[in-house]
Image 1: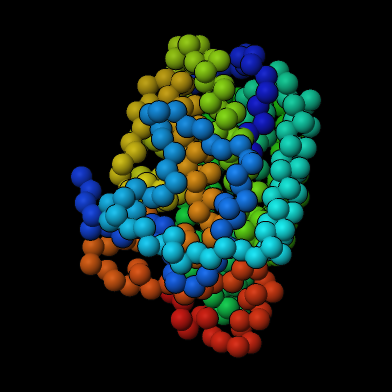
Image 2: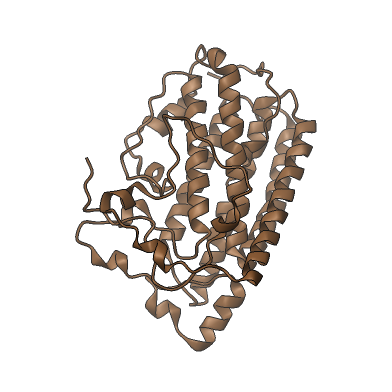
Length: 336
């Protein structure tokens, strides 16, 4: 999520408006055909560093529940050409991310909530773009993958509530901020949709870069302003979202966790930002998993004794691949 770009430690002056078992299937189950793992080329990149109370998981906890490790055997090493392509994609993504950070550092050096509002406005855009392309593939009968649509919608739902929180904190008070955020969002949508159509792996890596920065941004903010935040009340929209009765979509975007294992407590504004930070870490892990085609599964797709979840067909790794496969086969008849 683009809220990654906070740099100022100054506190804003804007006031508030007022037991799971091994019966589950692993979320990271991979089919037997070969794929490129983008993470193979991420050794030199900064990693998402999580607090001890919020540990990072390379594999899904459902993998540990079953003790499955066979999925690693089905992943072949990319060729030299493929490695080169991945390096170029990731270099472009890092350049774009760093460029946006520098621009926003200048515009929003002392206005934290306004900056958060701008970035949360555009944070939902990649997930809208992903769903648009996926719907196009489905309309053309190329392939269908309902889990991707479910998870990406849940991610956009989560980011929307981050935006509502920033609005309640007064981050959208200035006309300039609203104008800038809305017009950047339009450009960002078409850019992401084009990138996703050409290379889903590249689009997902770009989103991972953004979400990684987002986690670090909120983590820095709550460490520097934590004591002040603890004295301020939580916005009502945050209390309703994080502690409401219906948390299906809240669980849905956290694909590295079992459903019902994260239930936040919201007592003050510190808790709100703490949970927003943790949300960004979950987005980052989901985006990393998506970089392997066909790797994503909805946390709610794993029903006991449901063998159908183990049957996965290859999707399309970009629009060219979709067109090629549509000529030689009928993916829509195979893929759920």
